[in-house]
Length: 281
Image 1 (cartoon, one colour):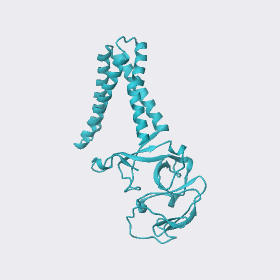
Image 2 (cartoon, rainbow, N blue to C red):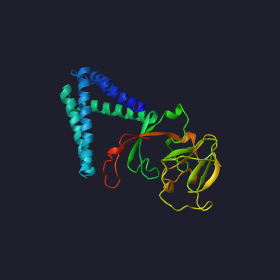
Image 3 (cartoon, rainbow, N blue to C red):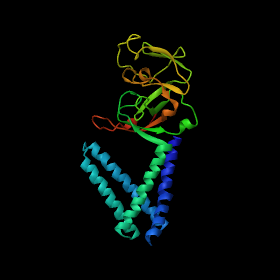
Image 4 (cartoon, helix red, strand yellow):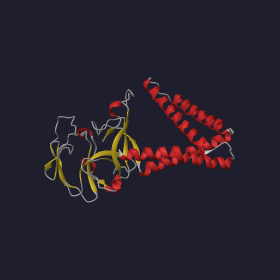
């Protein structure tokens, strides 16, 4: 919650202070006499509201089951034209100078987004069912990027990390074993340091149990987690490719901790799952 408040405050500051200041600076460079801080602030608020409206339009088209690249392109172009027109009228200037102000806004927005994405929070879309029912295909999650700079991962944390076999891919799993823990699977039950792990989130979809030595999905170990490593599993235990198969996650490869589902939309029917939006993880 504190992270969401921080990001929200940062966005508010960018709208109320930083963007108007940038416009005032460019106004002096472009010699736009009607560009004052007060007028820049009101214009920025107006464009923010219009931008939100243009983001809602594609959502409405989704409800109507109208998913078309051409419609998205038309909406984007319309938003651009409206924004530049408002800048031109509000500041009594030329189209070219209005485009310059708009570009400065886009550059700042991109830099701010990169800053937030790199150091604060990053958005991920879930492409597989390895974590259901905790996280479903089509869920969009927010990941805290800096939390593990101040604390170590804990059992039960849902983390995003670089897949050890293909580092260019990101995986999301739940932490089950920490450095020094001994992990063992016995007929689908996970034991940590010889104690059965309570896992209300774990799901088993296949009643068949593979015997030990035939398939590591249901029975494996015992294995000890090395220093600076983690043992992770998907909540959908019978359909998850995780530490049982490819080994441990290196501590340095963790990108962050998943903390919220901020959007959820079904893959097949594109229906918004309102009940999942805002769900903490």
